[in-house]
Length: 429
Image (cartoon, rainbow, N blue to C red; front, side, top):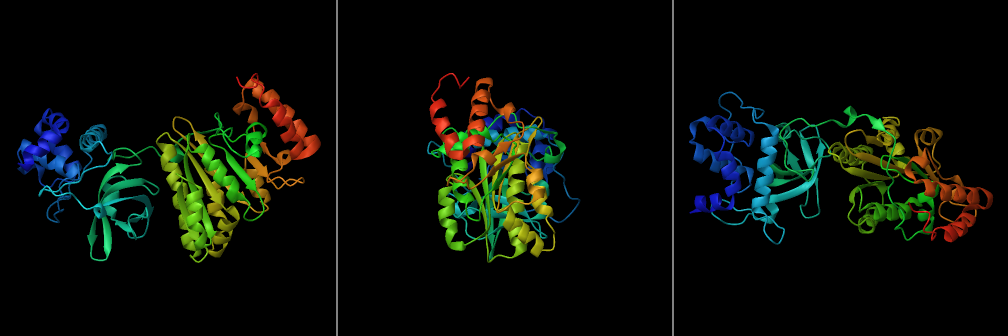
């Protein structure tokens, strides 16, 4: 009865596999971890593959006898197509997924995990959501099988082995099906100047709407936010709110107070928050920043637009010095911002208290504050390299007018001029 129900629920998957010859089915079954596929009949092999690939049946135990079977024979596009079909079949109207074992009982919620992969000496671990307490261990074999990289967003099944939780199978990788093959690498893409700006026109802060003209933030920008200690939090929260509709926002908080983290998570809404409190070691703080950066790289590689907000570069530099690594990670993180030719973008906004000359030189956009007239940011000291590339012809004229007002009368003069011209319908093209 269970087999009939499984075939009925996953009929599109069964039909797709049944159209393949036995050799193709065996290769696909190997890719999904089915043991000894040559000893099974085609129908049985298809049913076992559907069960394991869909998380309905537990992963088959790997034998230590004989030669190790590699999962590289099946075409990656076919494996991805099968995963997509499986996900379509097991979605129910509520949007949740039913996980059932061979006894037709639902899998416990605790068997499911979601998190971001961090590589370790043992293999890896998932930085999981609050729903899964503790860490989920990821074995080197699992990393190799699914071609995982640090920063991958993973949704899958886990198993509790004594005091340890271990990832058994990846169901979803970075929002899509596992690919079982090498993926394009971030550093292999050519870097280009930003060509599209992150819209700040919806911000409640008038100063940010002004800077959307004077010093716009492009997708792929390297923005230095030079503010006194603690001044970046409000700007970051407003940036995250404006950007959430068009980019994937990640926030890295280094050397924070533990009691502040709950409020910080609430302030950033849907953003992914990676935090390291001041009581953590320097190594743990560096690891937090590195994973946040790698998470954004994985998103950019697959064609998405990612925004990394780091508070702060000053704290990160201190952690690097304490760990004896100089400022290598700071430079790597800041330099990673770019638009990838043929893929997505990675925008980095790093806060620094009294930014160094090296940071100013590396940045291709700077927001600095506070202003002499009490505003959070000083419009006359904010600029973006090649800002005209991000504005329409009519917006450029308005931006030039606003820059002139800021230079002559400071931020408040620019804001007063902004109020007069922003409602002009001829500005927007």
